[in-house]
Length: 62
Image (cartoon, rainbow, N blue to C red):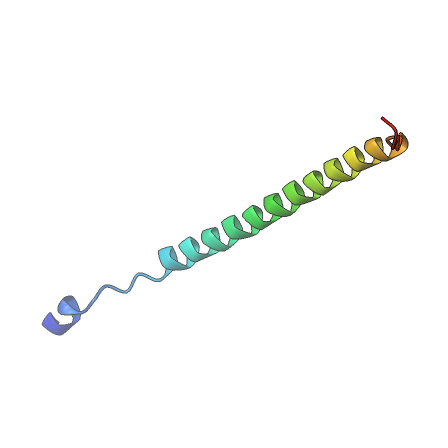
């Protein structure tokens, strides 16, 4: 009985829950990063299209 009480505590369920929560947090973080990058790429594309509508005139004699 003394050997049983002296052994290390084996708590498995909180560790599994902690790892699952960490994985879900990492997945949510990756999804947010991907959405932010898509929004940034979309904004840059729109800005480039606005600039491309009216090209600057080339006046070499200015």
